[in-house]
Amino acid sequence: MRGAGAAVMLGAFCAAWSPPLAAQEPRPTDSGQPVESASGARESELARRSQNPVEDMVSIPVEENLDYGIGANDRAQSTLKIEPRIPAHVLPSWNIVTRTIIPIVYKPDAMATTGGSSGLGDVNPTFFVTQAHPGPVIWGVGPDVVLPTATQTSLGAGKWSVGPSVALVVKPRRWTLGFIASNVWSFAGQSGRSSVDKGSLQYFIHYNLANGWSVKTSPTMTAEWEKASGDVWTIPVGGGVAKVFALGKLAINASLAGYGYAAKPSDGPDWQLRCEASFLFP
Image (tube, rainbow, N blue to C red; front, side, top):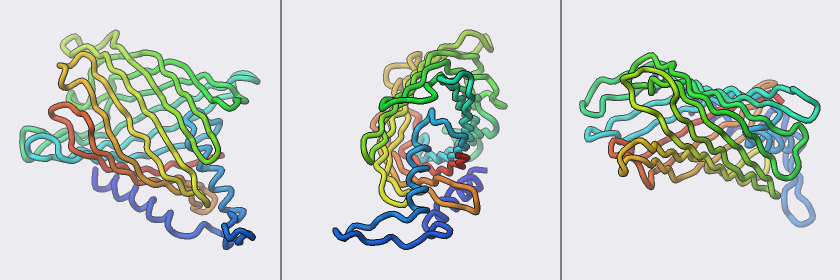
């Protein structure tokens, strides 16, 4: 499962290195700096739009996270996340954007050299109320929900959880800067499982280049407040590159990134490889 997911993501990223369909060569200006072709300008626009988590555009990111160095036996874990983002026009001035994370997980047995669990993890829908015609500061607020859908005990919390979530985005010049922050608390579920009190902060920094290329960092920091003090924080640090390209009439934003950990639980991984392909429907 994890090998197939990684292969799909890496294949999509490698396709980004080929020229866009029907692209023209950039024309030099008097200053010697290239000007984007019409197709390159469209790819750059789609890159900027796809970087906004509450954008009025349907997109389906598919993200493979490969974590390495888990436990004393340096095991590897695979988490394939399918994240449809769908806007709904509820009023002339307001949209509701849903982002649903559907994780398919292989989790190794950290205490052994072989074996583990695989299946569906806990599904995580978030609902953002946002302005239909935002200004320079783009925002969204709404509930973050975690559903106990895991098919095996080790792949989920076994609890229904809910809490507030907020997204904030600004786009100065070539930059896209912002974050999504939330905290959820459990309110029902399996009585024998631990309570959930978990905070999450995903900040993102994109610097946009020509023809749909960008460099980026978008780690997700988490704090599990119920755990012992040394196991509360997970703080990834790193970054990567991304490129929007055309596959027929379909636009895809592909990226490849690597992250180490400034802080992690005692049984956490040493580093992560993240491959992503976002299917865009403007």
